[in-house]
Length: 135
Image (tube, rainbow, N blue to C red; front, side, top):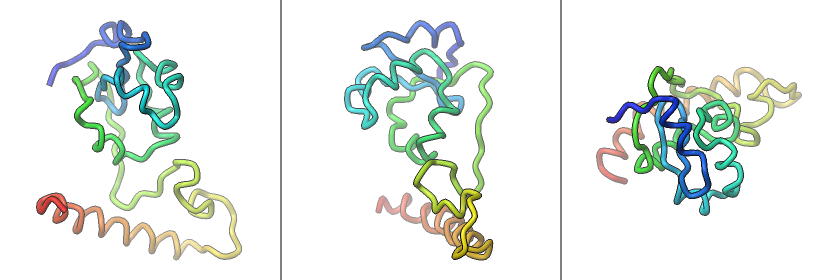
C-alpha cells in the first residue's frame, strides 16, 4: 500500500478532490462526499487532514471496513487506534448512556460486563465464521 505524506494529504482538500486520514489509513472521499449521510460539508471541513478523532466521535470502527474500497494508502507516521473485542464505544446514542458513564438506577456494572462479554464473543468467534462463509 502507498505511503502518503502529510503534505500530499493536504493537497486533497477541495470539493471534488477530498482525501482524509482515519486511523492511519488515507481515504479518497471525493465521490462519497455527496452520498455522506451527514452531508458533504463536514467531509470538506476535514479534507486533507487527519480526521481520526472526529470520525470516532460519530462512527464505529466497523464503518471503515464497509468503505475499505475508498482507501488509497497509509499516512506516513500515523498511529493506529486499537480497540478491544467487546469494547464500549463513545459514539453518541449507540450505547446506553449508563454504559458510557452516566448514572442509572437500572443498569449496573454487571449489565455492562455482560454486554461486553457477548459482544466480544460475537466479534471473535462468530464474525470470522460469517466472513469466511460470506454470510
